Image (cartoon, rainbow, N blue to C red; front, side, top):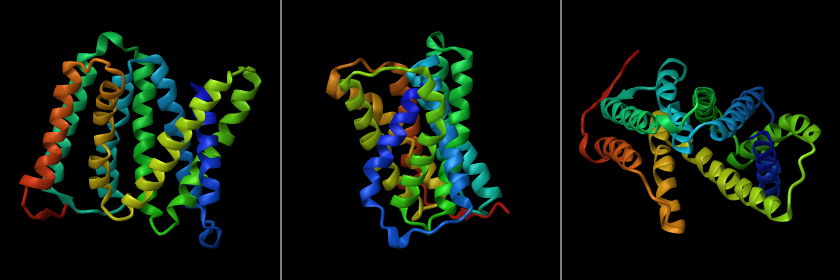
Length: 250
């Protein structure tokens, strides 16, 4: 877990390095907060993934949606749309359905790490919104670089030797699973509220098993289909069916 979290981040930062517009780079203390939450999310998720079921680890990470709503309202003073509340309730129902239905494959310590990654992920989304005037590539590069460097002293003493194919796979994960998607996420969060960002990001854990099924034919269980349907239904309510006014909750 530690090794994957470390090297995946370092490869992502290497891939993003040539893309950073250094003329737009500036330093501010909030960047350290962003990097700290990213490191916590990255590490706790990978450790959780090795200690519980993949579905539980992924969907428990996305309990971040609840924390984003709460802290977006309290810290960023964002308005809460009624449609967002309906979508949130559907999302939480879908997540809990999947986690509880697959509890036989889970371990308590893995679930705790996955829940911790959810809190960390909420911090990442909030940080991206808070730092929305920063260059998204620079912000993503710095998050991955600091995360990898912080974990490096933990990984190196373990003396794990990887085969060339393993290095290649980790590099691809770093570039295409972490680096480039987070650049797009950083740009997107700058244009919408953190509530909307958190809800839209729920598409990722739904699409994961679908891509696995399409590419490798792996069976998608009913818990994932039902839970994913609840999440998608909530998003449909938010963006298609709900026309109500915003509610100011301050």
